[in-house]
Image (cartoon, rainbow, N blue to C red):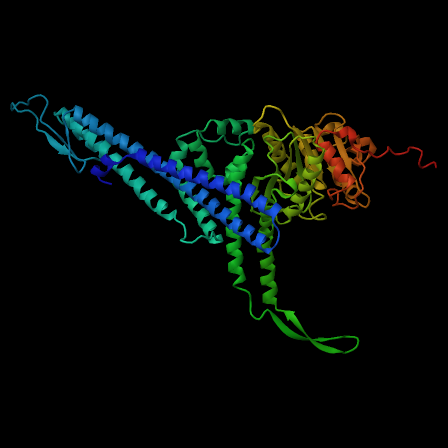
Length: 601
C-alpha cells in the first residue's frame, strides 16, 4: 500500500460495512427462526399429505439458506472489523507522523521519505548544517543505525525527520500487511451461485472460520478476553461486558467454545452450536459421500455351500472380504450422521403437540460425541429437568435419550398448572461404551462430574428472570453413578434428584445427594437386573444402592418393566417423574415400605 492510498483510506467505512453485514446476519437469523418455529410448525400442524411434506422439505432448504447467510455474513463482518481495526492503527501512526512533520516544517514526499531544511548552529566554516532527505526504516537494526546517525548530525531536523519517516514506513508496512492478509480471506468468503446449501458449502464455512480466526487475533485481543477456565458466573459477567459487535465476533470465529460456555444465555449457545452442528454434518456427509464412491465391485461372490450332514450342495452369494471391510467403515461413518439427523429431527418436531423450541446447548462430533438438547428455554423456565443418560450413551444413540425428555416435557407440562417447563438431555460426558467392559469402572463418573456441576451452575448464571427455577436432575443407570459422584465431590445445585435403574451412586444415603431432605426419588422396575449387578462396583458403604430401604430415597411406584422403559408415554413411572419435576412430589405414588415380618409369614 502506498502513501497516497493510506492517506485516503477511511477505516471507519469498513467498520460501517461490517455493521451492514452483521445486520444482514441478524436478519437471516430471524428469518431462519421464523421459518423453523412458526411457518414450519403451522405447516406440520395444519396440513398433511405429500404436498405438505414436499412444502416442509422446501422450507427446510430455505431455512438452511438463511442459516448459511447468517454464518457467512457473520464471518464477513468479523473480517471487516478486524481489517478496520488493523488499518486504523496504521492510519493513526501515519496521521501522527504527518502532524509531527507539519509542526516541524518538514516535507513528506510521495514515497514516504521526509525532507528536512538546513538548521542548527553554524559550524567553524560559518555555514548552517545542510538539510536533506531520509527514508523510513522498519528493520530494528537499520532503524537504530539511522537514529544514531541522525543524533550525530548537528542539524536537529535530521532526527525529527528520521523519526517521522520511520513512523510513516511502519504505518505503510502494517497497512500493507493487513491488506495482503485480509484481501484473500475476504475473497474466500464467497458462496456458490446456486440456491442449494450443500455439505461441501458447510465444509467451506468451517475452513473460512479457521481462516478468519487465524487473522483476527489482534482484533479479538483488543477487547476483554474470556476468562480461562472461568466459572459460569465469570463467563456470564464476561459476556455481559461485551458489546453486540464483540459478541457477534466471538460467535462467528469461536462457535465451538461459545457453545460450551456454561453461564451464557441459552439462545447464544444454541446459535453457536447450530453452526458447529451444520459444519460437523457437512464434514461427516462429505466423508460418507467419498467413501460410498469406493464401494468394491463385485461386492458379492458365488460360493458353493455343502451340507456336512446330507451332502446337499447349493450356490449362495457371499460378501467379499473387501466389501466387508468397506461396509464396516461405512457403518462407522454413518453413526455420527445418525446422531446429527436425530438432533435435526427434534428441531423439526417443534410445535408438534405443543412441543416448545429446542435449544442446542452443547455439541461435538469428536470421539463418541457430545450433545445437550433442551426442550424449552431453561433461562426462563419455572421448572427445569436435566437428564443424565448411562452406559452406551453417545452421539449415534442420542435420539432415544432426546425422546425420553420429550416425553417428560409433555407429562410435566400437563401437571405444571400454567408454569413453563424445560427438559434437557445432558450428554456432556464420556459414557461407558460397554456394560461389561467399561461400566464397572468409576472413573467415567468422576471424570464427568465437574462438567455436570458446571452445567448446573450455568443454569443459574444464565437466568434471564429474577426468580430461580425449580430444578430436577434425572439420571438413568450409570448416569446415576455420575450424579452421585458429582454430589459427593461438590455442589449439585438441584432441588430434586430422580434415580432410575441405579447400580449405585457411590454414597450410602440420600442425605449425601446434596438436595433437601426427602427430595431424592428412586425407581426400580420389575426385571431390571442392573441395580443388583452394579451394586458391587458402585454402591456405597456395604454396597448400599438407592433401591435399598436404608438408603432413604422415596421409592416411587413403577409400572414399567426392564431397564429402559421408565420413560414410556402414558405410564405411571413417567407420570411420577413429571410430578417431581413440577414440584408436586406430595402427589407421587410411593411403594409401601417392605414388611419386616415377611420372612416369618
